[in-house]
Image (cartoon, rainbow, N blue to C red; front, side):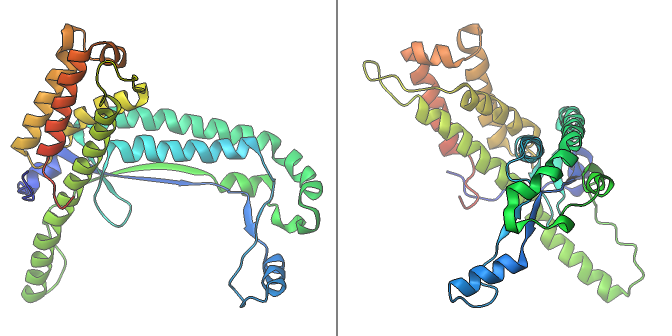
Length: 302
């Protein structure tokens, strides 16, 4: 197994093949800390001040509000994080240019759905406020519930694209400070690229392993379950090996080619969960290809 970190290409190639993308969303959670109830819980249990907190769900269970929260989680985990790679501590992530059209389309659709859900929530907001007293009992405080206009302002959905910064220091500093900035940049830039590549490796190994383990059974044994979601995630990640190969890693390119050939060429119909379940030879071949890929991917400290 090759444990050597990938060689970082020149900065221009990274800047021209990727962009930074930042996804920010804000929403009203319907949760609020009750200081009085928190103090009571603390005193009742002889605990130190500040060691316990009571957080109220102001509407109890509100399906419309929960739908917004669930949608945001799906967008963040299954679109934004899935199609991008880590880049900076400021919330920016790296998006390969090849993935930009898919990312923009999915995020545009996600934003439309976000505002549709917000609109549905706003339709029931005043009714939920009117029911809150009965739901919350002595925890109810009228001042906990903002006006409709104030609530609407708490929702936002933003996607911002920025170029990947290159080594271009134009600040008015002395030569010594400029040299120091240059050295810091030269140190951290490769680390950021390697972190992005490590993310690709980690996710790929995890995804391929799930499918490998689901077909790890022999003829005559009880058939394992091959979930379509696991299979589809594997297909997506194989494509990501190509689009997110920022360093031009030849080993990763070879792994991608071998996996693509196996998944696209089986019986000239393409691989499928059904074919893997019914064809022992195909299952054995696929398991071997997956195992080779898992062991061959650069470890980068994994």
